[in-house]
Image (cartoon, rainbow, N blue to C red):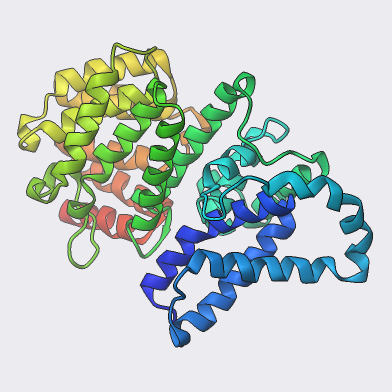
Length: 405
């Protein structure tokens, strides 16, 4: 029997929670993930026929624990089990059985003993639920390379004996930066999927926002946590207007703004308004402020582009990078004309990381179109379409090129 979307969404939501509970209880990340995958498979086979159990998370924990214990009972695992049994016993003590350990799992995946790429990859896999192929595409590396990176990260956690606890205060700031970046990546993969037929995946954007709310509960006074939560809310608020009924992409300027989620916009604006100026300024706060300017405009023509340009100029000083420059070029074009924006885009042509970035060519095509150079715009749109693995983006870019003759 085919698994229903409701069950599929439920399993995706519960997977990191169940893994967190197993790691806390048994202290084995790698074996725990294997056991969780087996439990998820069992649920995918049984629940469509027998119905979702009254406590689906407890069901998954029970099945996964049984798989883990069965593995430990094998002759090859006996010595390891005996040696670790005493040390592992206290790990789950005093923890409510229905507690959500996803946040602790998130920090575990961002442990300083792991390299930054491994932290990102492992968290996207264990907490975000992305496939190895999706993560590989996000990092622009072969799938086999990413599989090895994730495997090494899990082995490192196993060999170093990292405890399953929230990090001490002395380590929290560094690990928090990685955590925020990971959640940003998870959200972006959901908001505009990097490959395949779907433009967006609401399960990933929803999970990223959920985890950001958990982070804010843990550290309510951190300005960048509030800033990123506001940014995700303000961006996700436009989701319903980003695609037509057949899944075709709708650019921001052409979206039906009455479809935007006003509750999310109000919450995001309130968050960033209360935070700006009260804590050290950071890139997520500035991006949230830019998103708020877009969302508060009644129409595309009412957008306060000079304010957006000013915010991008501050952002480029606080957190310089080619993607920021790319976005600033659009604001420059809207304020000072498309040729000024194209001149700024030209500074990115020699940067290796932008050579195969479809967004650079897509923006170039847009600005060339605004400048009246239809031939060059058409070629840029075509190059951009060839560079992206997202089918909705391919269709949109090809259509823009076709409309120019």
